[in-house]
Length: 153
Image (cartoon, rainbow, N blue to C red; front, top):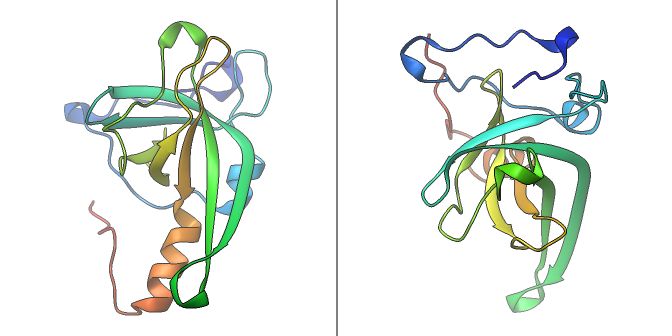
């Protein structure tokens, strides 16, 4: 999860299970503190999908906002964050059937909820996730007493 020598801090979790604890905020999405093999800032992510199982990916620092007018003239907003596969040799980050997988970083912080993808092409593969910081805020506004992810020690 930390390919650059200066960024190595990942320790394999006891029992092989990464504890999910916390959420990656907006600042960390746009200004990641991890470094890739070239020393460039990069958010490395992992997910366990129904179809592709465990895959690694790279956050792109690109967010897209879509607003549409839905039923009853209600404006609906969607915010998506693009994820690329870790490398071209690793295959796609996701495939049909992986939707609603939770995507986390190497610290176990929730990055987002997988919502779709553009599909594998000769040039690239792009997966879209809804950032969890954004989703969590909207859910808590609508359901103030909700508790979406327990903190377990």
